[in-house]
Image (cartoon, rainbow, N blue to C red):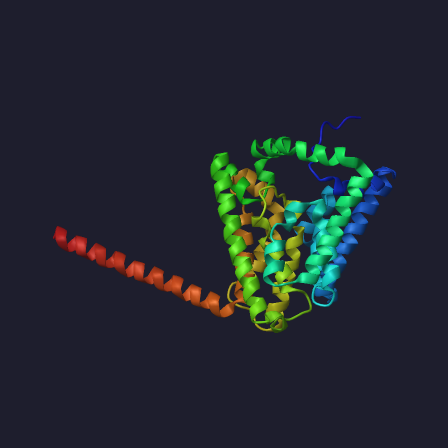
Length: 346
């Protein structure tokens, strides 16, 4: 039986995971893949949300359900991000080992250098270099130079597949595909994607630097690292190639924000942001197909800004006050202008 052609744009490091599973019967392989990734994912979230009742929303989270039913790798990558978030405070080198394993899907690590350098997490960086470099060397030994040269050669094919919509734009969740879904051209999509990415880098870099400068880690509830929660929340803006199953990892910054609200007091809008971030993936593809609007940039922006407000409350409050003042002054100017024009006509 033939199922047609399937694209495989992953680096050879991912073959280190796929090859052993390919040697097993399909049922055993699929069960082992889904079971291992699910246990790693759920156990990391349970470390943040230890209450019995929390298991239900964890298993019902649309990001988990979509990934599990599609058999994709989002649970594995999310688990690596989640465990690095849990381990960084006590075992930063081991947290780095988890992050380094994401060389199987390197676009998920784009924001990591910015945040880790700004917070001076040298042991975490060392762990990432060890595991990431080790996987690269192991894949080269196992599959040879031809595997890596083939991976780099297929870059053009991957770019064309992505830009031309051979993977339907309504399935994708990035800023780039949000523009393409609205029939914007490729150049405009790249400009907006790049602009958004650079802005998010400046935001998370500044927040990380400020947190490190003020040694603010101790001011947050829970044992998980807020900088990794920030890194995961920034992920939807850091790569143009992003599908809904990649966003199972958003459960971790959502869990961190929930812990902060429950331990202190809820800030205005946080509950509705968490609610929307929790449910929207359930219908994101259908919403995009029906309306030509991708909801991810809007929901992810709200989640990222909610986390930023928790990390820099005074600065965010000042910025919001300034924004409100600018809007009020603009409204007064417009009303005065309208009165002046009406007087001139009279």
